[in-house]
Image (cartoon, rainbow, N blue to C red):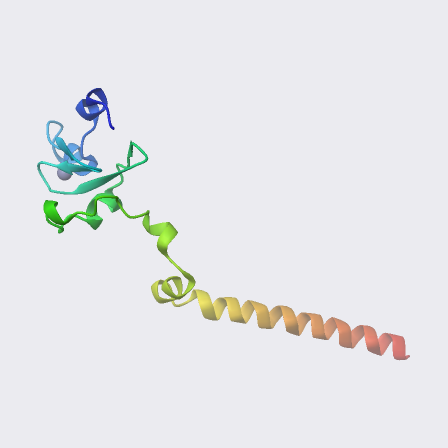
Length: 118
Ligand SMILES: [Zn+2]
């Protein structure tokens, strides 16, 4: 449970930025909902997560359809295929780096073999 004192202090970071008096939040279950912009900030383990990214995620979801327990943060959900889809340059880069390492190791092995051969 988030204390009323904390609720009184907390404001939606987006609306406070636009107008100092704005960004009043209403608590609904595990969510803090901004009265002005309808961004919805999750409360995880009794800690309100006041990140704009988090508020944006469920902005379009009607209040009645919010999950009872907020889903985990985005970073923790991204798996390797999702990461590859988001930044397509990562995977070829990794492969290239691996190939480079193998090539280097092979060259060193080749050179050391030649030296031994002499
Ligand atoms: Zn807001």
